[in-house]
Length: 166
Image (cartoon, rainbow, N blue to C red; front, side, top):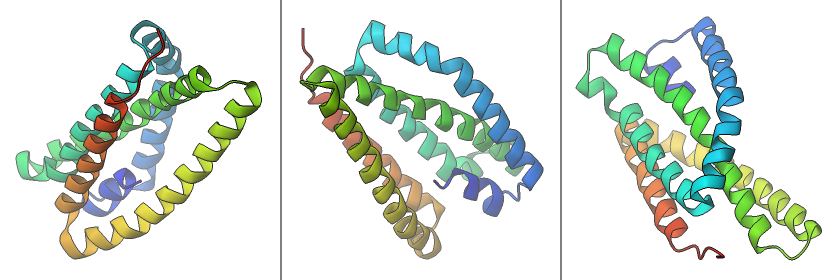
């Protein structure tokens, strides 16, 4: 949610740069999507769900602290790469869908569970965006992304508890 805001508000990215990042992200996701599916098939949904949010912690770290670690132009490039990486790791949500299919007793249950999950995810995203904007304004970009990383670690810890069918 906040990646493009970091690029625009913190680093001054213009519409051309954001459009280029959208295009590069779309191409990368197009290429990576079948690869993520193969990774899920090979290593399992649990490993992918854990790895996804651990990578998200790294993404959050660089969004929040790149400007402290690198000169502004290098930090900006790191955040651009971060944006693309963030888009690609969002493909790992396929692992959740495979998990639901593994648990469900019928195709109707799969559809209902996934559609409910998407709806709840959108609602939470809206609420987090509002709360995150307040955190950014009051406490700074670093605090926002540290809290996001903590949520990612919590997600990884929860994913680690998933029982996998043999």
